[in-house]
Amino acid sequence: MTDTALILVDIQKDYFDGGRWTLSKMDEASDKAAKVLAHARQNGFMIVHIHHEMLSDDAPFFRAGSEGAEIHPKVAPQTGEEVILKHTPNSFHNTRLQDTLSSRGITNVVIVGAMSQVCIDATTRAASDFGYTVTLVHDACAARDAEFDGVAVPAAQVHASFMSALTGTYATLVDCESHIAAA
Image 1 (tube, rainbow, N blue to C red):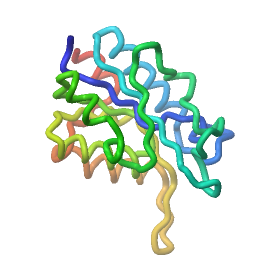
Image 2 (cartoon, rainbow, N blue to C red; image 1 turned 30 degrees about the vertical axis):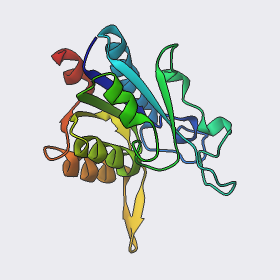
Image 3 (cartoon, rainbow, N blue to C red; image 1 turned 90 degrees about the horizontal axis):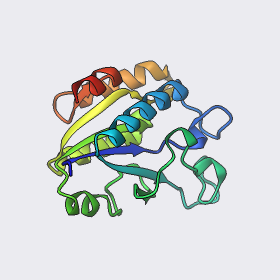
């Protein structure tokens, strides 16, 4: 048994082309996430799929029970893999994630998924705060264009800003190929 878990955050249909909240480069990021998932399965890592649903019928995306809230087939859970439902950006908040990891003796987590500026940021910081050694596979994450105070920020810049804030203090950031080659 390994002390490492892969946490796949919100790789759900609404984030892909045709979904209700399309992210930039989600296809590319999910392809990388699928490679990281295959690697984790081969190496006996604990696999945790985080599934976000918003409880309001007015939610802009991830409406409870909708097709868009389903985990994308590229990273579909297999029998025996954990699937944890959440209702907030932080995958640890009001979920069984912390208890699940602790019960398996997990000390290291690898994080992939979406959205870089919300759920990836919140989950990475929380994992670090709980004392896990965190590896964030940055090219297996995707962002969305943002706007603040009349300033439009392209998704690539949003992603880079959040990754730069997480590196070192909260996580070790690596690309997909480096992560796979290191293990």
